[in-house]
Amino acid sequence: MEQDVKKTEQGSNETIIEVKDLRINIKVDEGILTTVRGVNFDIKKGETLGLVGESGCGKSLTSKAILGINDKKCKASGEIIFDADGLGRVNLLDLNPRGKEIRSVRGKQISMIFQEPMVAFSPMYTIGAQINEATLLHITKDKKKAREISLDVMKKVGIANAEKRYDQYPHEFSGGMLQRALIAMALVCNPKLLIADEPTTALDVTIQAQILEIMKELQKDFGMSILFITHDLGVVAGMCDRVAVMYLGRIVEIATAEELYANPQHPYTQGLLGSVHKIGTKNQDKLFSIEGTVPVAMNLPVGCGFYDRCTKRVDGVCNVYDPELTDAGNGHRVACFACTGCPNAKKGGKADE
Image (cartoon, rainbow, N blue to C red; front, side):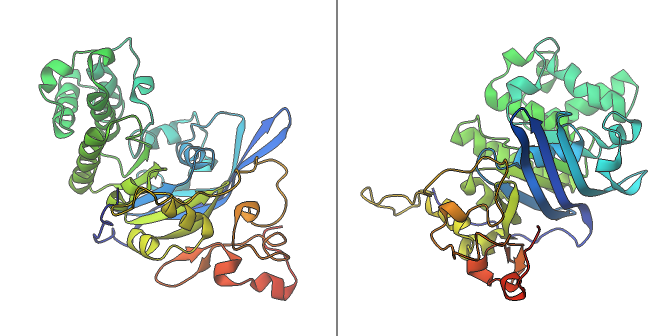
């Protein structure tokens, strides 16, 4: 279903977080999986950045690297610069993932909503006790005050009869109500940055719309920034200020939501948008299908990762040089030689060897 592109003012020019050349390798029996390959983006205060891509492209690994909660087999390099209270501008990758400094950031200044709420909550403890864990750790040691704070946030996310719900267990909540509780747990410490990893995937359309509306309202109230991770382009249209499209561990296009939907340039982005059902599409009209499959991120050849699936590829260029994000105007950047040309080819050099 086609949705209106969000048309709101972006946040201030103050950059909350900046990811620079993030790379994540995973050692497996067969070799090294290069799951994230030089990701770059920033998020400004009050801004929502959408990170879009199909399953396995590295979206969740990127988000978890920010919090330092990836499996220890994941080796990350690059920089994740965060404007942290008490620490200043710090590279989060330099911090001990189990140290005191990262714990002062994780959960308090940066929070995360995970994909599946039934897995995020322990069945052994009440909802209130689990929300209160962050409240007691980061805000106050006074249990009575902590309960009041937690109840207040539960009410803000639309949990009816919060006093009763506070003492109930996860199995007593519906899927939509459990997602609200998960949002409450993420927001109870008033974070600077909220990472929402596929927050509405398991919900029906009606509940999904309610959850997204709650997130937008709370963003205004708290003044926070959001990294919104999804594969649903319809959700992105109504939720995000800017959108970064990710493929095979790299960002291949980034622009404002309005610009991206009006003028998609990368063939992969065009394919994603072409595969979405739109109002007015006739029954006999076929949706666009991207041919081929995503390569395994191991021993990848030099060149564009989308080369084998691209209908606009240029032999001798796209399979020889690695495209970098290049300015295409209107704050629009794209990593595609068919869109921007290949200055490296003219120079006889290879980008990112």
